[in-house]
Length: 135
Image 1 (tube, rainbow, N blue to C red):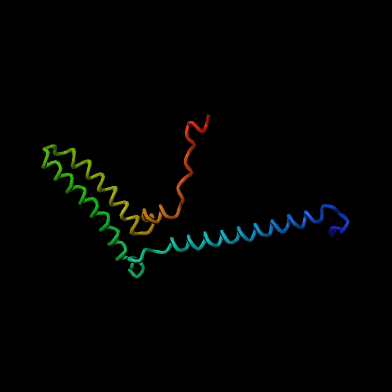
Image 2 (image 1 turned 180 degrees about the vertical axis):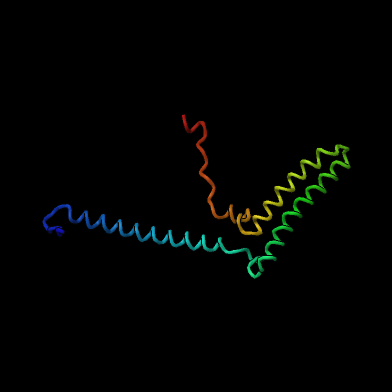
């Protein structure tokens, strides 16, 4: 391996580039460590499920799903009872309740972060240029 000579005009710029690369590497290592700690934090079970046994977790997740589905069905039946459209509202709100039950179950299992966390963690996308600015 050769060492740079002092009379080489490129030796100063090489050392400068190596210093910049070293700084970028340290910055990248810091960002990777921060991302790993965030992922480890998000992988933890929710506070309500941390001390629970397997059966308790299963019952809680099942009750989240059943409650969402039943509430949707009851709202749909009430809607149909008021307006006389028996199968339509029941079917629509039953499907909405089913979706809400799945979402609540995923949130309880800490698979989907709450909306506040999702919105706070990612900055909004940059606004697109107006038509006047593009011309």
